[in-house]
Every structure is written in C-alpha cells, then in structure tokens.
Length: 221
Image (cartoon, rainbow, N blue to C red; front, side, top):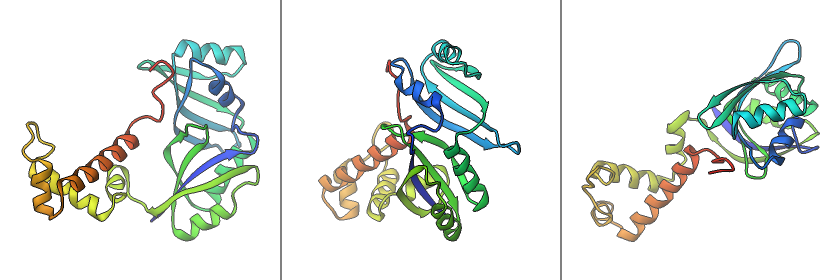
C-alpha cells in the first residue's frame, strides 16, 4: 500500500468562506480536520478543530450566519458542520471516491493555510487520482512512499542510520530515567563519534516532536 502527501490550495484560496474568516480573526487559528464526508445528497459533513475559544467561534458563526454545532475542547473548539461543499471540495472528495483512494485524517492546515492531505491506495489508484485533480486547485506533491499507520510511519520515515542509532540508544538506556548511557557509550557501540550520535538523535527528536505536536498552538499560546 502506498501513500502520497499533498499540499492543496483552491484557485480562489479557500475551500469554504468560513475558512477565510477564521484565518483573518486574530483570536482564532485553524486546527486539524478530523473527519470529512460527502453524503449521498451531495452535501458535506465536517468535524474539525479551531484553536481559540468556543465563545469567539460561536460569535463568528452567528455574525456570518454559518450554522454549526460546537463544543469545548480544552481551551479550543470542536466544530461539526453540515453544508454544501464548494466546487473544489466537492471535486476533491469525488475524485477520492471514484479512484478508490483513502483520504487519511487528520487533515492539517499548513502555516500558509494550504491543506496538507495524505491519500492512501495502490500506486495505480493514486496516480489516476492525482491525474484527475480538479483544475480549480493547486496541488503539490510533498512526499510519497509505502504507507505505515501511526507511529510506525514515523519510524520508517527515518534513515537506516537514524533507526539504528535510535534503537541502540533505547536498548542502552539513553532515554531511561535516570539515563543509563551517554553519546559516547552509544558511539562506542556503533563505531562512530559522539558528535555523530548527538546529531542523529537531535534530528530524530526534532522530527518526531514536530510530527506529533499540533501545527498551531493558537494565537494566545
């Protein structure tokens, strides 16, 4: 099974006009889209997060007549909407259905408000789906590879040397509390320098933390 990670921006910049309102509001920020479905009547249901208070999200919906169900999610807001999709959103979901690919979730907004989407399927289905991408969207391929779910994907994304360094560090107790190994101990096992071990582990830690942390911590964080 293969995957392709895409960045998608509609030609008119936004998939729904409420997305633009959230981006323009200094108290709010886009969170992940957890579920998105195109229904048989061609309407769309979406479950997603907005970083910011429920009170501000509710006020913005009311100000612009966008009905939605909302709930507190810590300091942030969980939103459920049922509405007509934009042409681009409809075309993208239709392409996924017609070409038998899975739209993985969560779907994230990048720092420049593009959608970061991972599609899963056979190499042939992914290629046909990409070829049928709607003309109204700008689609950029970020990464491709063999699909692995969850944390296993994080591990397989590392280089062979990084995986070897990480497993050795774990086995020798570098991440135990209290720590039972140093860079030098690990370097002796791997026949490399302590500096090299440090570089590998810092890159691994940086990559994993960026992947598991929310893309945005919200305007007030």
